[in-house]
Amino acid sequence: MTSRKTIFQYGYRRSADQGKTRPAHHPVVIIGAGPVGLALAVDLAQRSIPVVLLDDADRIGEGSRAICFAKKTLEVFDRLGCAGPMLEKGVRWSVGRVFQGERELYQFDLLPEGGHKMPAFINLQQYYVEGHLVERVADLPLIDLRWRNRVSAITRHADHAALAIETPDGPYHLTTDWLVACDGARSPARTMLGLDFAGEVFEDQFLIADVKMTADFPVERRFWFEPPFHTGQSALLHKQPDDIWRIDLQLGRDADTEAEKKLEAVIPRITRMLGHQDFRLEWVSIYKFQCRRLERFVHDRVIFAGDSAHQVSPFGARGANSGVQDAENLAWKLAAVIKGQARASLIETYNSERSEAADENILNSTRATDFLAPHSEAERTLRNAALSLAQHTGFAKRMVNSGRLSVPTAYANSPVSTPDEAQWEGGVSPGTPIPDAPMVDAAGKMMFLTEALGQDFTLLHRANGQTLDAPKGVAVIGVGTEFSDTEGLLEKRFAIPDGGGYLIRPDGHVAARFYHASQGKVAAALRRARGG
Amino acid sequence: MPEPKLITENRFPDPDAAFRLIVEAHRGLSEEESKALNAKLVLLLANHAGDLAVLKEALEIAKR
Image 1 (cartoon, each protein chain N blue to C red):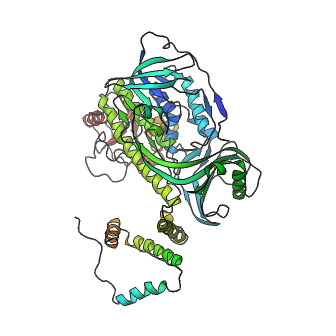
Image 2 (image 1 turned 30 degrees about the vertical axis):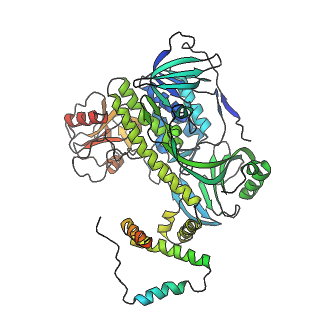
Image 3 (image 1 turned 90 degrees about the horizontal axis):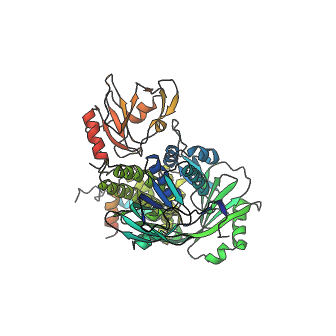
């Protein structure tokens, strides 16, 4: 059951770089055509940067990987031109319910407010996400996607990297200005560079299965502590498209991995959970979770993104979502450096900002995993006290932790943010990702702010009668001029005073905000956002 | 060192009564029930204090 069925099959093709006497040179080479490598390649190509994307396989397989894609990630995919089919196929959800035994402890709603284009989450098998990204890649001639190209050696240099690559036609070599390793949690690139991947391994084992069944359970995330069907442990049930349901069952520290993987052990466990045998097992595996990270994500011209840089437990959907957000953070910076709009030192802010995000994700993921699998009897007693109080008290509900679901990190300490010049009442502080909001354009057409943003920097400006000549590389969205805030949500979410505005980065984070926007202030903030 | 926030001087008009109340709650409980009671009490009172600095000071003194 651990072998992966092929979902999408692609073909190896010999590239013109093979058989050259001198290695071909490229501005960017990406290793790994998973969600992170594909998103990065599309983002760079949309910024006119040519990309070579290498993958050691030639297919996308099934398997228990990411299923929950968060609002910010969907906004990225929308900008990359492939969110439509994902939203159509995916299962939308925002409600989660948490049980202890038979009793419901509480429920939560992740996106109770309207006026956002994207839902809080969709559930979609990772292979569909990858399939749609590969389709998008096919539209972009700047991306050279090479299947069955396995990197066998990497040499670091101060201003480039050299690669040896194995193919069905034998080996060849490349050099590149920038190499981005998006090659997953077991990253061969990380091993080749001899980098330490340090962190915590959790002792508890979890059985993860995808089952196919028709069921009219509501579209909710259901989580049980000490469920009646699975003694003393925890359980998760979550719907995916195609009548597939994800099941996580905690097995404890002492479970016999080989015995538990066998069908005669798995089927009765799932039958007890579902209360019937009318399901087909699509996929099952047994895991121990880890929370680890590289100390640095940038090593000269070799950059790590996604699981190769940081790994978390699955409670909170922080793996693939944070990886795609790594790609979004890196893409505009790398493009700015390659185009000569920024110095190479801007890439160091990818390291610092995404380190802040990785630490936040590891913190949340570790807290959730520790809550599910206490390390000692005393910890278990306190955990159970919180569960038992949660029924009657609001504060204890907030302590119960079945996973804190992925939200994008606000870069509180970012060197590229311009600090506020005065105290702001409300709004979005520098470094924070912007909320979405509906607007109406001059022709009377409704659209969302996230759709109005371009590839570059944007000044969201409440003009107050005078126009502002924005510096090159900054598009202007005029609130109250070309766009009206008919529902008042821009005002509510951004609190822009007359004459004020926000400088929004290409990745949708706030670079700066101004009480009185002027060309000089915007230009200074832009310079700072591009690394000075 | 920031100014201590945890009050360690007596605040009960009848401290004996407060101590007895907690002790007597454990009468007749098994070891396990007693631990569970203490754990719930800690969480309830920690939330009532609602101040991470106070909690940290209390933990420091309790661990001495």
